[in-house]
Image (cartoon, rainbow, N blue to C red; front, side, top):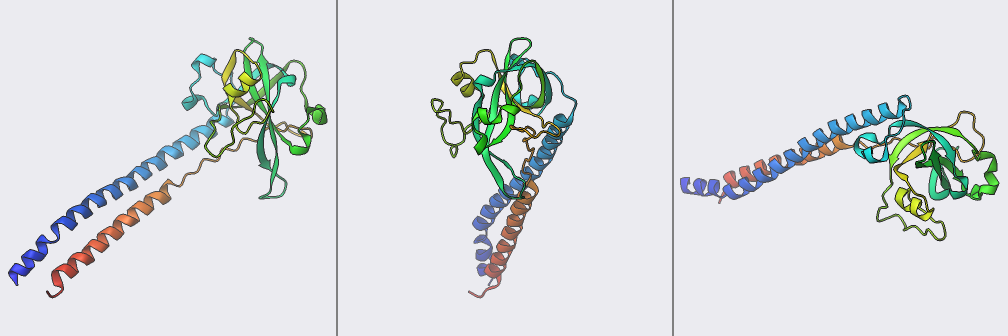
Length: 247
């Protein structure tokens, strides 16, 4: 009997080591998700704070750092180049909850008083107002001031169609690509998402930026810790049967 029990204990060594390794990995993944949750909460708090702060001047292009500068509330003075606007396919919230409007984001070069150019997303215009001639009441001519949120150039993911600059078809807010297609020089490496204008009835309409960063890390942490607990339970059942089942 003793030999059998010793053999049974020895038979648990390899499964036990494998289970401990797996348990360590699962626990570390859970801890990592808890740390990510703390980081994400800090990031969200920073973004909300920066986007709601009083507008400041945007950084010089050579000092632009998306990690710290994105979502900052800025103000710039100059004039729009309305004849070089670019339309980017997009969706915007409609009046009916859960039903989005199809249309375009109107990206217009803005020449600042110092001569540099910044692309400004003036806001959303529905599909039926694609032609600039149909929304002339929304054009801003002459010297003006714009406030908005700084954004980095939007990368194109594998699910986003490639742009067709010749036909003017764009699907992401690609700052260098749009600048090159419109033959713009001295363009800042960022974009300004224009604020909403109170009481505005014309198009395009700003204020479309939604700060909605998913924060599911606590759920992921519980998942990893839950799997770890299941692993412990399964191993103990396996070990008990190995030691107590008759040979």
